[in-house]
Length: 320
Ligand code: GFB
Image 1 (cartoon, helix red, strand yellow):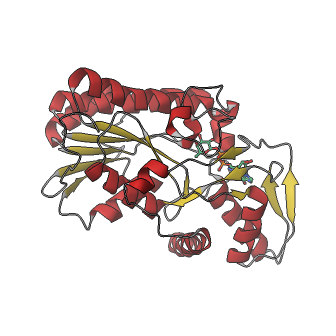
Image 2 (cartoon, rainbow, N blue to C red):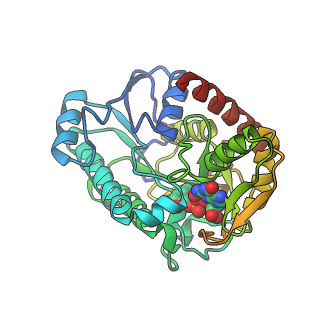
């Protein structure tokens, strides 16, 4: 821990801004923070464009948060990462620099920055320890997003060193859950395969197209477990080095597709489209540091998938 800084940060009575409250992570944070005795601050993109420094500074001076969860980002799955490099680099650099600098200006007491496990080298040792950062080339499909997230994490370190601020950064593994994006062109693998399996079932057992070879391995964390870990870290972690958040379990994309088809009740065959990218072959983070602090995930993958599918069915029914 940083010398002289108490590790315990009390959220009670604090004004807590969840930046990106409509996203997958932000909406889970709002659910989780409801059981903390704090005031939750949110602002929509119709009011504040987080890519505009003047907007962010104006809003922050008026809202005066005590603490910030920086969960706002331009995000998406492998295909949209490959096809929108400028937005994934520019938007994320702008959002994080604007929020972190404005937080310094208005005297925010604690800030938690969210990165991603794609910051690590493509061929990092598995499970990936925090100190694997910047030890090798990045995965090309998401290097733009990864570079922005590396810069955000380093900004937190720099602000801690130069200004003595209690800014921390976390690197969650691949996430999924209620509130995810199910649009096939932009989504991550779990909502995409769920939507495809659901459509295949409706067509009476049509095949399910899975991108890539099915051999890559991924670790998946249920987003409400992540939100719980983030609140835990906000309260208990105060160090310069970023910290991984994962479950310790991994699964191949082929196994995942089979499991999702079972959860959805789709019995069509899987077809692998090898024209689509596989991305990094394996991405399992080493969460030893977090686990040694006493935090544990609660939701197994199958249970989490069932809860996510329930949410998808309810939200689809609500839309129609
Ligand atoms: O979830 P995903 O898009 O992200 O893809 P990454 C994971 C794996 O699932 C890849 C395969 O090997 C995909 O080829 N996959 C199979 C599919 N079928 C599908 C499908 O229908 N849709 C999608 N999206 N994938 C992202 C990064 O990488 O991970 C982001 O691009 C971010 O920057 C995120 O870091 C956590 O794990 O490959």
